Length: 446
Image (cartoon, rainbow, N blue to C red; front, side, top):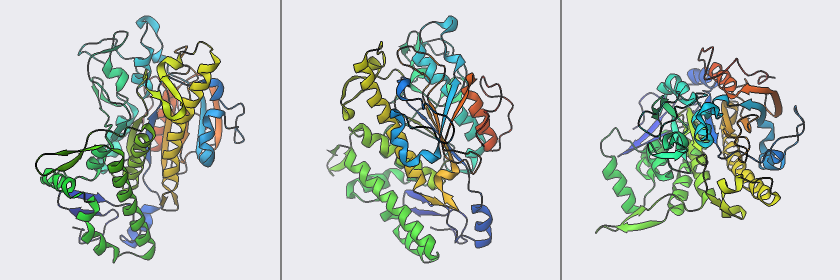
């Protein structure tokens, strides 16, 4: 049921479902005009495992006329919205007195900047990640404070990397020093989290009914949607139709991508797991993040393309060997070629997210104009296990606070957390330090 007085954001409700809508300017013209002038800033952090083959990653030129290296070529359509950041490091991921365990430290420190306690027991200790610091402030205004998704599952215990708990190596987001935020890998469950109305108490029966009848979530709110459409201007009617079409399309793709089985006497059709095809999986998750941002269901997200140390093979690009095995290339040119293919494939999934955000109009620009999306790895080169001069990208305009389309090279040893400290200021959080930062990252605003 739509609120009797149209507000900036509307929600369509049905039995067991609620569909939040994007910003519509018809909702209170005076209020909408002032609010849409500065849409909320959204932030996402995308993690790729095992470093890069840096010879194929780093642009050879700096500034606005930087060249797209072989690994970055999938970003050609959105290069003007990309900032390549060179020279950034994770000092607390280095071995020091802790010895081996670079994959665990890489992922644990990527968003915290804090050296994790080396333990495989219950006494894990890490820092609060930047996404959760931001979510604690701006997440109170949205349905979900933050959204955590990934292409590989996580663990909260066990030994994974040279005496480090699996919690470090398989979780990117940390709510507290001993509490990681587990990521969801099943696109269907992400979709249900975004649109299933768990507050109403009828979600289980509603989900069962949708499974049995193979009905769309939009069928349950069709009457509300029709009623709302009649109250909107033509531009908003078109925006509403495009948005709801996008929701239905994602539903369709989720159903097609997941193998199903019949369950029980009623022959309920239920998914048996995540999509088998990696690209289908990654792009469904990317589109769900974009949808969550578009409907303002959350303003903070993390997206893990693979856990660090992952040995997944990528037959989609002709690599049958495991990624981790190939990353230990020892200078072998054949392995370099395979790494280039994997690295470029990961960048292509990131490019899909960026292109999707750019395709969505919002206010006086696009959704990407009102986002900042960090992409990177906590390891530079998988063979050396080093954490200097990391492969880092920043996409989006940050509500006009970032001049993109450039390659910026910072002095060697500049903490990655300097970037995060700069992001805090852009969402209105006053802080003088984050992780191992030494100051705000220079040059982002041009």
